[in-house]
Length: 502
Ligand SMILES: Nc1ncnc2c1ncn2[C@@H]1O[C@H](COP(=O)(O)OP(=O)(O)OP(=O)(O)O)[C@@H](O)[C@H]1O
Ligand SMILES: [Mg+2]
Image 1 (cartoon, rainbow, N blue to C red):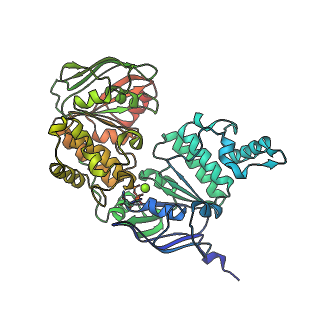
Image 2: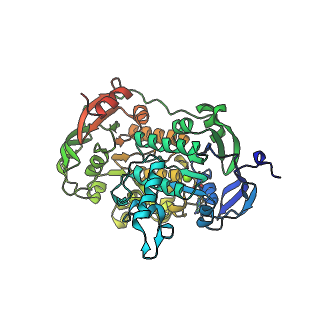
Image 3: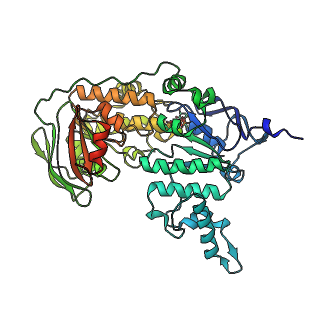
């Protein structure tokens, strides 16, 4: 006779994993006692969260340690092995086939309804409809995935997971590029699954999300589990303290900005068809100006326009009072304008290149080839960037793709700081970055501004803008709704203007 109550649903015991010289997991442990719970996995960037979850999903194999499912030792030699046992992962990167329908994606080939004449489309679509219904998703199973919003695509991934009788759903930063409303609908689904007995492992660098959703928590530090228990035993301060192993530093408060009445970057009547209209905006030297607004308000497009990404951009861009020609990113870089896009994997970094090459790339394309620093002269620049930003990498020569998500973001930012840009354009600069590193980044941005750089930063996290900006420009449907000084900028005001109210 087995004593069901004493057997944990899923256990990771003392798992180790090295990547070359990096000891990513060194005694990591996780215990999910039973289904119907949400388990938060928290830790700083590079602490080993994704590595542990990949081991659980069969995407990589541990060097040592044990994984047990229902008390039985398992070896997940391949993702399909874990899938067959009901362990399903959803990350920010979609694994859906964009040109197939929702139904086809949910049942991916081999699991579609088949009859004597091949795939029975009607039955497949009907079964997909049932899965969508179970999640209360109002989506047409025949719709092509490419046309869906990112959050809807994630919902389809989850629907696929459910259709495979998932027992454990792994969400590794699945919320990081969703809007607040989208996060809420994802949470609603996770709660529904919890009621159905599914266990979820949840990773997010937004502590508010963790506290809103999770029941249990496991804390990783440097690849080891340092604490675990009911989340209600923790508050923000104690959780952060356990994550970093010292007291968490809150970001420094920016001193009052004194206007010099001179603009470094001025936009006059800047428009991009279908995205932004007639934008006037100034950034003074040493000033941090925030861009607030809903997703789709045109914040990213405005930044991209200043960086020369849109050939059909009209209006004027001035730098220190002089009208400049910015028809390509190359022009922008030549004028000392740096850009950290929200999609760092697409545009911000060259994933096949090393950390060092990424850091110096922007710096060296600012100079003629003859004057480019030699490899030895680069070293101090690279070392400085790695140290000040606390970038965790095995070596400066490691491929950037091997860094944890948050550390990649720091390199994307560091490359423009190393290039000594005059103006920095930042889109969601702390997405995927842990709380401690956020403080670091805020401090670096403050220092950069103090040295005279003008910074234009877009973020969907309003508290972030309130913490770092001297002024906040609120956009709505491609236009500026309001420009708020420190005194007037509150969450309420930003929400009001950001939703189109006067
Ligand atoms: N394929 C790989 N090759 C080399 N090093 C790797 C590889 N994958 C992960 N690492 C290293 O292992 C460590 C743990 O990385 P992991 O991605 O698990 O961190 P994380 O906790 O998920 O961080 P983040 O919060 O930034 O996502 C990091 O130092 C990372 O650079
Ligand atoms: Mg990760």
